[in-house]
Length: 114
View 1 (cartoon, rainbow, N blue to C red):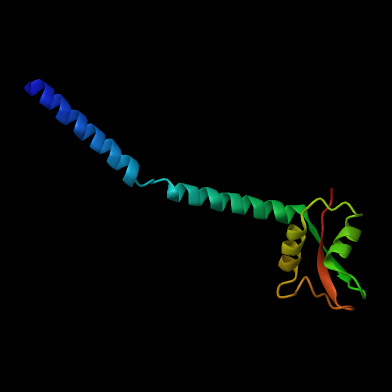
View 2 (view 1 turned 180 degrees about the vertical axis):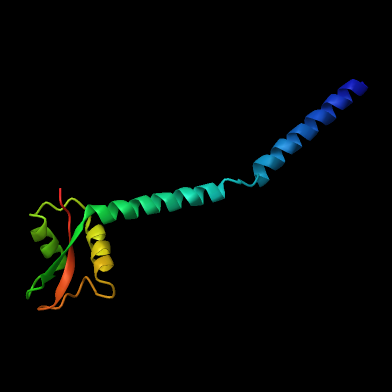
């Protein structure tokens, strides 16, 4: 009889322990390693972006847009997203609005060679 009570109490303690672990959980100490990975990925992306395009200085004509100039520079074979073109333009021309280019002004535009 004492053996059965002991087994019953052991099983109760085991189930309570499992229940506590499942409901509360345990902290994951791998967070700093993930941050380092994200930094490495960001650095690699930035290096790839810098290697992917070459800046070209052009004067904007009336009616030109960032997309039209980027397409013209790349012979209508733009292999990057418009968001990437905007980021690269902003990187080349800090403080300039890519959505409002002034006619007659010169800007650096990203050229993506093959």
